[in-house]
Image 1: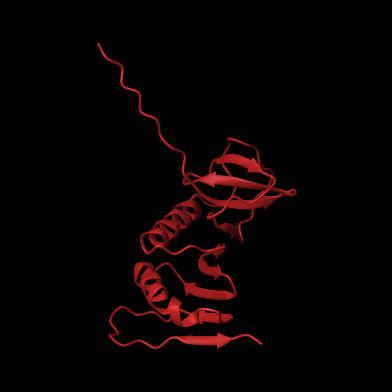
Image 2: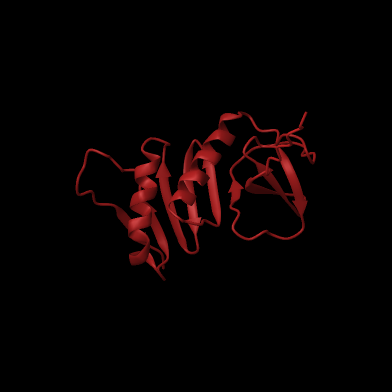
Length: 151
């Protein structure tokens, strides 16, 4: 009889900053690595309230739904090939990409919001300010979004 070994790659979805370390966690919120420097391509997740962090244990946050939301968001971003520096998430998510802040609002229509963001990014190249996608409505064929430049 042959034994089959399945190796699951623990994919890191984000990190939190904790006592001068970066704590990287997977889709279930398990802390899989602690590092003193940022790993490229992984978003910093802010806005989470947590107590004491222990390596290889779950990040102690109020609700596990937070991890589902973060995973969902990071998966949609990667489908569109978008990389973000920071995701601020308590209920309503805000993305940070360079000098652009993107207000996503609630998780309704997230796919459409990220698709719009992908389409608009070329025009935002080199700009700094806030893009409001929280008004996204999938029934509107020619939507308008507010971009407030900074400075």
